[in-house]
Length: 392
Image (cartoon, rainbow, N blue to C red; front, side, top):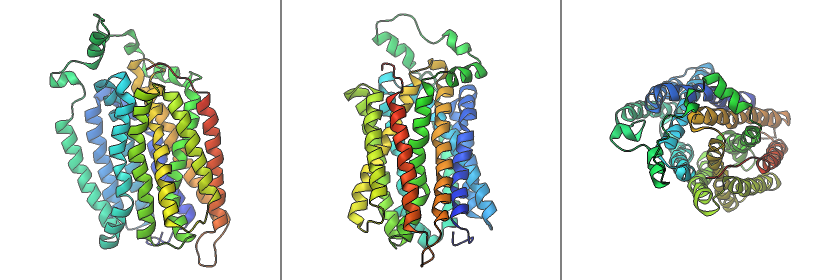
């Protein structure tokens, strides 16, 4: 905001560009993953992410930053779905939620890197230098993933997971060649979007993850600065607790769904109710000037936010294995579309209340934004209650 002299509306646009790009790339990423294999897609689009980071790092105006953010969104979008597809190929059905949680736990270390550690690097080197450095690291990761990763166990001399499960279940017929594999791209999309049980999860995900991205991804930092007057190092350190909570919550929720409750829906209902209550706490205690309070709140907030990982196993169970990439990518459109929409909506709401005497946004504006997100989570709770589940 300081570097290019932009306000809340422009920052909302900057935040939302990533999520619009991410959302729009979901279906293409699933199709490309099926056609070219996860390894190639991950390597190529990690390079796209690197290009976006470097462009942001060398940007001389706000429009270049927007373009960099757009490329980062496109690149990151086409990495996540191939990884989820790879997990479905390499692990058993009753391991999928747990492994998805582990993968997201590792990924959410990035949330920690986006908080306190990067804040210190930003102070020492400047934010554009940091972005350039991240771009260089991404290039190295793209090369490494192409060299090391393999799409299927058979490419490394192992048995396919379908054959292993068939053997464990006493079956003698391989499940490799099912008629469902001949489903065309358009028919698979119609199959997913035409299934009524898909939509409660889609709407739930719009609000669940969208609210997290609106808060952690953009507006929590300005709130802690404008209302509580905390410096960047202080509030970045506090936001780290959301990342820690996510790192714990993702694998724990997957394990609960796979091994404890043996129900994805029950796990999601519990997580959604708790996450909704925490959103009302964010709204009700708006303006609370107590770092310990925020450490506890954010740790719990991140922990129950991490329960979202279970929904991938739930939607995967509703459709044939041959269209897992399509069903997952269609579902994954909604959280990032939600992030884009809710970041902008929050920006408009916050800006509509004007500025306080110190030039920051008002407490009333932030509180109204939090209330809207909390109400959205009530809608999400209703949706997940009416969602469909099939057995592990």
